[in-house]
Image 1 (tube, rainbow, N blue to C red):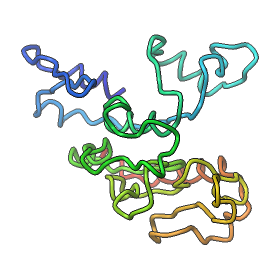
Image 2 (image 1 turned 90 degrees about the vertical axis):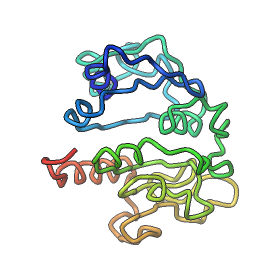
Image 3 (image 1 turned 120 degrees about the vertical axis):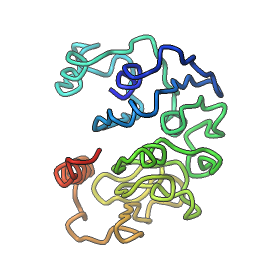
Image 4 (image 1 turned 180 degrees about the vertical axis):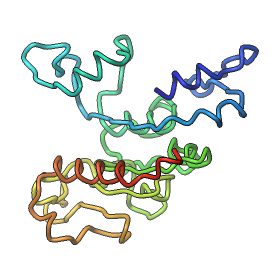
Length: 219
């Protein structure tokens, strides 16, 4: 959706610029600022080419199938085999070889501060930015937390995985640590209603609440 909007306002005399393996499409500033669609990015971890209903009759994914039918399918693109590099690529617009996040250990190899991330760019354009769900791009220092990288709010787990009911962290030594971060209190979530509560429902409710509470006069 954002790409379509950018293409629609690109000056015909402006050339594409190649940088670090990514293609950036410069836009005519005045026109671009007038077109600010609301954006929702959904990143699904570890989904194979045959793991969706519209590619396999063995899978039921009605919502994704509807989006594929009514939207644009990019069937010749590839994503990284692990979650953290894919997320880093989405947020920076660069291939993993340039971000320093090469594998699934996004906690150890935090996404460097030298990169301005997509939410920070959107904020400069007047957008409100929120993230719900998995982060896994660094949390050993506060400067790597989602709200320090451009998001107005964040609710989810910071490491690579969690128990979907107890919200205990995944990985060596993390099994007794609750990994559920609430940026509103800038610390671990403590609401008893979350324990136990299935993560998918919890994140869905938070995302819905954010959308419903959003000021429709601004993007």
